[in-house]
Amino acid sequence: MASLGVNIDHIANIRQARRTVEPDPVPFALLAELGGADGITVHLREDRRHIQDRDVELLRQTVRSRLNLEMAATLEMVEIALAVGPDMVTLVPEKREEVTTEGGLDVAGQLSGLTPMVDRLQQQGIPVSLFVDAETSQLEACRSSGARWVELHTGTYAEAPWTEQPHELARITEGAAIARQMGLRVNAGHGLTYQNVEPIAAIPGMEELNIGHTIVARAVAVGLQQAVREMKALVQNPRLDPLFGQALG
Image (cartoon, rainbow, N blue to C red; front, top):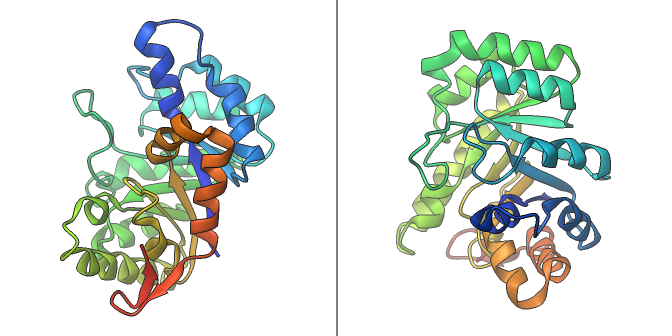
């Protein structure tokens, strides 16, 4: 049964649109936990477009579940992570011009630079997850880096036409199985919604799904606590669908 990590970046997006003090993502993390979130995820971007340093520091003091810090693989971010001490770090690709993360990290192409960062964080007791596409070469590189976790990029699945979703689901399912055979623990996320999350949640060995935008969008109508409750129910009790051989999205 997968757990649910709630990404609250988009709360900060609303605040930063006006460069004001509200809404503050810190108390909203508490509401997410009250709604059943098993963890809180934030992405501290290099350009600080939404989450700010003070948010991460205060969340470390107030989150009672798990704090997952997404960040670029840079020396600046490693220093921040070591100072804050999140429960997990997820290294992600980052480009200034992108609206949101566009794909997985090229671990195979950056292995020599990533390995010492992974080692440094994990030596200080911070588990590292690498956000990657479900490709065998990338998963092999993740294992070589020493990381203990991978987070499989589900954006291609989420954006695929319904006729192609079974193929994308099979690709992610196979990637999860390969990762587990390599001794890696498996999370997933990106682009997941109330409509498409169940097949991903039903993948054997899937440990946690990190979901943000769709929950915050739903919260506009029903409030964050209720929006998290609704997503948690889908993640933990996916319905079976014979077409996908997985779950009914």
